[in-house]
Image 1: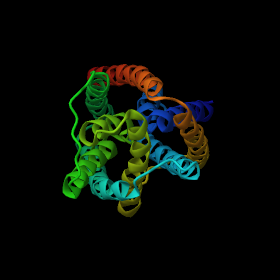
Image 2: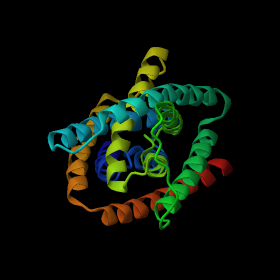
Image 3: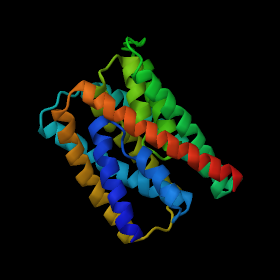
Image 4: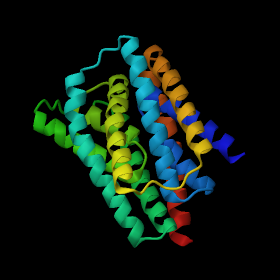
Length: 260
């Protein structure tokens, strides 16, 4: 029953993730935390594996559909994302030794909830200020911040990535969704490599992991197709609704975690 529920959550989350750039982890992580069946390290690992799988299938789908992607930009920002991902994973592992499971979950929920609220506000401000960063050092630094945040929170960083890409690189939300998913691939790859090298892979059911990966790949393909079909206005509206709901779930997780 739990595995089936995980599968439903993951395929819907990754579909929306590839569609509007959410990544999927921002939905998977808080909902699996809410279910409370697995510990925080298992949830983070399952979420990362699902988001990584989604990023591969979604990007391959965009390439096969001849979506215009500046791979030089993707590689440049991903250099920072990889370094940031390693740093974020290391901080998470350290805090696991400092806080108990509930407290760390609450801290993650609070930080993520606040970042999601700020992301929703920014993308809906009419004629919001944006920059058009071209300096390679600035692009790498941006990736560093995004990769660190995504890896530490265990969410892929999708909606935060989208808002950040719109703000600093003057992208449309439709384009930011594509680049967000491409960047997520590298940040999650670095996190999974770090987990493997450090020997901190949590004990997780092989069936659970297999279901997560299959559902994530399927969701990534469906979401990429939807991104090609929908216009900017619809993508913005769906992004706003989903992120607002997930922000609420994160605040709920934070409150229950702090008072438990």
